[in-house]
Length: 366
Image (cartoon, rainbow, N blue to C red; front, side, top):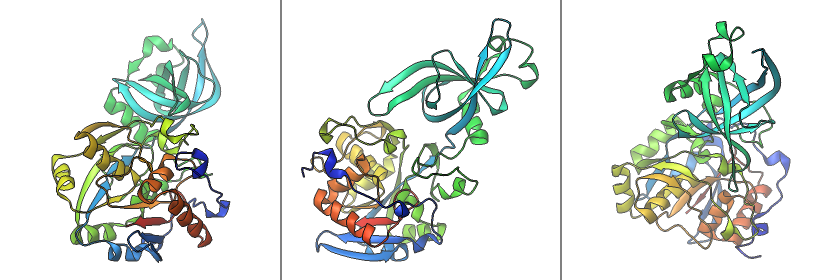
């Protein structure tokens, strides 16, 4: 099959291979190592991760931090007499800030422009505009958020009581009432443990709605050891909803990539430029490196799509988890090793009972 055909990136995965929770200790997770120079496959664990790295490599980590971006609320209506009626339950997912107190949200439920959703803490959202981006799908809306004192909510009209949320208040609201946005293939509710488990030990900058999953394999101790024994640096790319949405075009070159905010310090940029060998910890670190190499920008929006016809220019090696079929993440793996080898390694991982997806095992391509 052609490397440009979407159907080429499909595969069958037994349900029992999908990891719904992490494994502990983290170093016991399985690791498939593929060495391109010798075409050698090694099955090991993360305990031995560092032993496969070239001593001269620069490790690049994505230090984004996952927001508790999923919210649960209730649709409300208000009649001419200012009485308020609660309606259907509404689930929403934060994506990004568009303007002061205007946010791009994904809502599950029937909502039109002007509709209101009530959340805990006396917080409301008003739908301002429907957004339909092919890269993200239907269901995204612009919304503004405001608060109303609970004591006055049932005595006066909503509009007369509105107090718009500042940026700080909005993110504080997420921290207090939001839920960790576990990927849709994890068929369970998030737990208190997920607030720690679905976050890397080096997470610093809030903004992602999904974890850079290759990073989840490192404990405080193993991360400290890597920093002591290898050159290292950090970049930031805030992972958005597009990471979970499959490619929709049969020719992958026609796919419109989602945009995600990235930021690189001047020190990190200098290290990347000077490095003779780079190992990216995850697909998002890879895309950030390659965006910088191509554009020279230290921050902005990244919509770089790496595939077999647009290969990495600076990144020599990558640590990555096993990804869903027909996704840009799987296609990115093929940008390093080609379609045939990617499918071979995935078939091998399934045969060896590797755990797939966000909480699953990993693969190091050298």
